[in-house]
Image 1 (cartoon, rainbow, N blue to C red):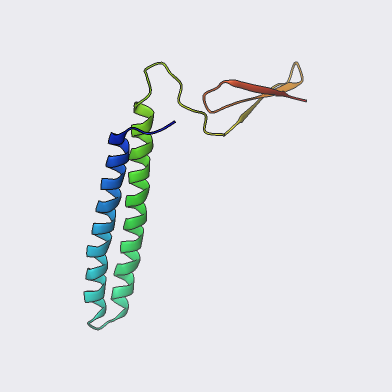
Image 2: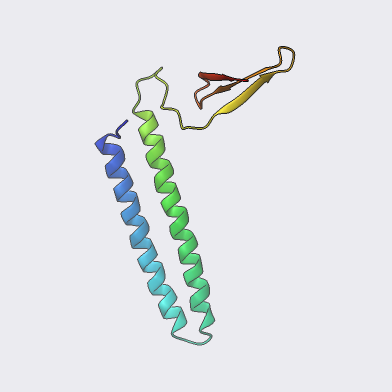
Length: 108
């Protein structure tokens, strides 16, 4: 599956904004560290890193949501590779399904 240009461009744009905001925040951390107490610059930089990681995660989540929206209505998205085990205690059998609930195989 390939993402459309809107999803890719949106992802790139969001990541550039994350980088821009991180640079601005880091500059603020350097200014904070230039005056006593110096440790406050480290605290600010730690907050910058957390904000950058959250921003990157949001960009990736938005990208994934965009890719899923590109599917034709009624069409299942690709399986994620995660399997769920189901068991019937009365029949003493178990089977697996993919992330879309599609049967994969019976376990012995």
